[in-house]
Structures are given as C-alpha cells and as structure tokens.
Image (cartoon, rainbow, N blue to C red; front, side):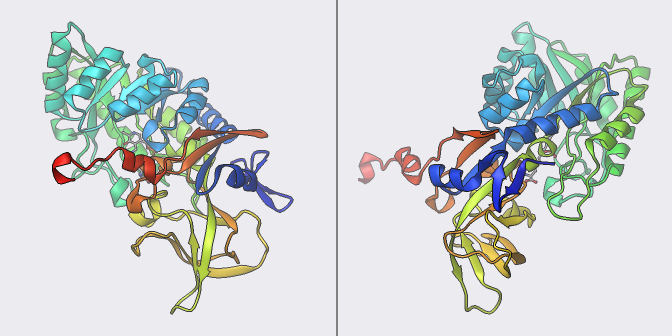
Length: 420
Ligand code: LLP
C-alpha cells in the first residue's frame, strides 16, 4: 500500500497535489512519500516480529537519498552499503557505525580502511583474497574486523538474469563446496573476527521458494561449521523481496517472508541481519514527468514523448522492466501508445503498446514504483543533467536533492591549455 492516490481527479502524494510540485520544482522530478517509507519499514519489521535478535539494514543502493536514509534511520534501520560513498551517506544520515554492513565483491583497500576507521558493524567478505587483505589491514592497525563470509548457494532466484546473484556462475560469494575451507583459513587470521555467514541470491523475488532453499543451505553450513569447532553467532540473509510493478503481480508479503524466516532459522541461535531495499522504497516513489508532445503518423501506435528519459529511470531500458504509467489528471479517455523519452536511441522506450490515458502535450504523468533503483541509477547521458528529488510529508514537501543541470556537469570539465 502506498500514499499516492487520486483525490478529486488529481493524483496526490499524501496531501500534496502533484501538479503543485511540477509547477514549483519542475519536471522530471522524483517524488517520495515519507508515510509510505515509514509504513513499509514498519510492515517489514512487524513481519520479522518472531525473529528476536536482528538488524534491518536498508540496502542504500536502492535509494541513497539522505532524506530517505534519515526517515529509515528514525525507523530504527541500519544500512547495507556497497561503496565508500554509500557508507558516508549512511553515517551522514545518522546511522550508527555498528548498524552498517559492507557488502560487495570489489571493495578497494581504500574503502576497507575507511570502513575500519568508521568502525562499521560487519564486513561481508566475498572472496578468500578479500578476507586476507582485510585481515592484514585490520591487524596492522591492531583491529579485529567483524565479518561474515558470503556464500554462493547456487540457487536460481527465478528473477531477471541481470539481478540474479546466487547462481554458481555469478560473481558473488564463495561456492558452497569451498566455504568450509575458506572459513577455516580466514577464521584463523589475526585481524578478522569471522563470526558467521551471509547470503543474497537476487532481487525482485516473487516466490519464497528459492529463498527458503538458499536459507536451508545456509543452515546446513552453519551446523557444519559449528561441528568443525567454529563459533557462529551471526547470519546475514540479504534482501530480495519483490514488489508488485503491475496488476496481477503478487509478491510474498513481509509477513509471509517473516514467517518462513522464523520457521527456517528457529534453531540457529544467531543474530540475523536483513538487507531489504526495493520492498521498502519501491512503491514509496514516483517519477513525475510532463508530456512534451504526442507524435502520430508512424506505422504503429502514437508516441507519447515525455520529458523523462532512460537516463532518469533506466530500468525499462536495462531490464525491460514494467512501470505503471498514469496520468496525474486522468480524463477517462484511453489510448494505446508507445511511451518514450527524448534520448536519441530506441532503447529510450518506457513502454510499448501501452494502454494509458489519452495524454496530450503539457499533461503530467507518473511512472509508478520508481522509489527504488530510480534516481540512484540515473546518468547524464545526452547531457541531460540529474533530476530533482522531493520528499512529501503530509501536506508539506521539501526538495531533498537539487536538480543538477547540464551546465553544472560541464563546469567540472575543462579543455587543457595545450589543446585550447
Ligand atoms: N543485499 C545485497 C548484497 C544486494 O546485492 C542487494 C541488491 C540487496 C541487498 C537489496 O536487494 P532488494 O531488497 O532491493 O531486492 N538495479 C536492479 C536491482 C539490483 C539489485 C542489486 N542488489 C533493478 O533495478 O531491478
């Protein structure tokens, strides 16, 4: 459930009519709803009520906006980060270092040191090599880095191949067959406090079965490691719970997910970490856009050309993803159209043969479910700059990220003297 709804024929974010934001901030613009973020955070936490000892670490990659992170920090969330930049954001939003988990296959030595300096709560180590490097770095500073070993359970998450992370051929984690060996080596290193395992098999999962299979394998590994004399106190179960992007998509609810987790992990006796991203932020944001013009006369349906493009919302171009497209002031008249942006490649298509409101030049519309993996994946392709972001709270709103126009980006470039 979200807080974007029609009121007197006008789409609102909570109590703010979207035309007001378009007028005052311009388009395209991402609009987030605080009440929706808080609701999703609460529902996720309630779903895990039967898991006593846990940390919910928001996957910052899904929406790194500082104001969004602040809302979640106030809701008691920590952060799952995958770069020094994300870590600095989490800290800037007031998240406690101990509530920060650092994942990712390519943490640089610089990032590892930065995270040791900050005193983060957990490193998720993705390779034997990374484990050795982290241990050496920490030992040299007289520190012992709290860590989990990320395993690759070789489970098909049944999601888009580009966002599947738990199959043997994916770059993530240690294959299960090597996990015991690698754990034994790294656990013996001064500089590492290797205390558990981590897993994350993919994103936008619409079925609990692959998660349950992966967690089952983690449970067996934990038992094996204990049998081998290791002390296991922590397990990180990653993120991945899907959201409905279109009618008829029915992802498991946080309550169903939580019940499965509680059942599978009941005898583990560990502290559990969760790294949800999309399920918290996805439906808490829309991309508000204005129709530039409607082009007719081609072979197929008309092209509704909007002022947002694939550089602002990359998911349709990158994954063929579906985002509902709705008029802000629907007339009731319908049209089948291709929804496209202004960028000079055919990939800049948000939807083909999509039935939508009969929009005309100057009308406002939104792409729904754009709160996760939206603004964060933007680029400045075609020198379009970065769009603004707004957070709505009841009847007020604030611009929480300025629009960065193409000029500001150009200002960071220069022609060397010897070329001028
Ligand atoms: N933890 C780890 C280690 C991850 O790699 C991810 C996402 C998450 C947590 C959060 O997963 P979530 O709960 O959001 O599913 N750009 C793609 C999604 C990439 C997800 C990458 N990893 C998209 O737009 O669909």
